[in-house]
Image 1 (cartoon, one colour):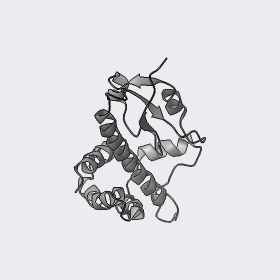
Image 2 (cartoon, helix red, strand yellow):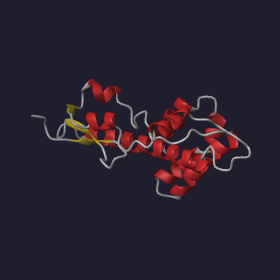
Image 3 (cartoon, helix red, strand yellow):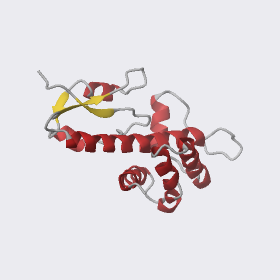
Image 4 (tube, helix red, strand yellow):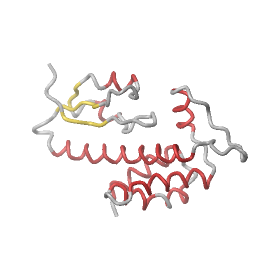
Length: 171
């Protein structure tokens, strides 16, 4: 049992799926196993089953598709590929995992604020990062800055790969 993972799991999941507590509870063990290094692909599959078994729509996923210029899912019993529950499952598992990694990282950074009181947002600049995240990553902030109190990890965008790191003191 991982109390931090459970807390983050419920924060992330209930934000987007508030009426699906029981169905999400079935996903939780696979997530705990994944973050402890056991069968990470099972977490993706459990998230896929969550969407498929409950025929859940996900506005955040629709925003993701729209942003990247992909067609929106159509729930149609005769359509084999839409919605893409596999992709949705992978994105949900990724979202939960990144939130957990950032919560863990934040705890470690807080333990060393005497040595490293300045933090910054790190972004993978590979063409998949959102412009908002890239812009936020340009500024180093003191750990007490309101930004760190308000910033959610992952951000509102699916496939967010931002994380917190310590940084040198700003100029």
